[in-house]
Length: 274
View 1 (tube, rainbow, N blue to C red):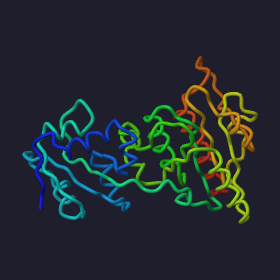
View 2 (view 1 turned 45 degrees about the vertical axis):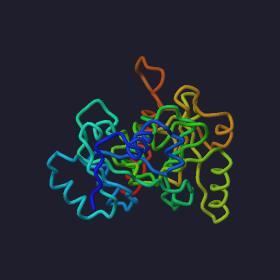
View 3 (view 1 turned 120 degrees about the vertical axis):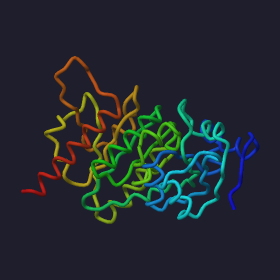
View 4 (view 1 turned 180 degrees about the vertical axis):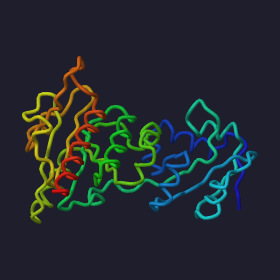
């Protein structure tokens, strides 16, 4: 049975709060997603869908009809002007808004093997940067992304949009501090799986192209303004800098992460061809 919502009732207000209120997202353990690719990837990867919200008056595309027919979730037909508000942007109303369940923030979701590549983002302040790093990590074969410390939210709508669906293709795990990550690394090292911790820093000790990044690597990316914390620097086995010849003295965090991820991918492809 399709529920209809034509006014700003309590249910609508609950979903609307998920766009701006991080604490309410955490308490409800759900967040909003729009867009054909993000919703499709989420469904294909088995993310639990709690509700599918669509326009009460707009004819649906074949994609939307297939989604409503095949996905087991509550279906809600909503007034277009309300659906536009849930879209979270100053554009036309999205065709479908999906309400997804958040997974647990468990580092065991990120598998570590002999080809491991992971990304850790230390205290990112911009949700768009988180989404961009997740997208780049997915593009270059990373196993997962870890977000640590007092940081913007992985499930903020800006992060979800910037990831363009990659959030649903690889684990993105939030942890409160360095302690959880150190314990996770030590467990893998105890099993014989050494992971090299590589920090990115404009004053790094090694040029990126001179570092051997073909083994298991956890890449550390610092806060957009302050860079890596002193505690994370101390844990690095290696710090790398990106050689630059232009007038810019540095890249932003997401740009630097993308450049290093590309170089890791390049080195590994070259190693396999030899």
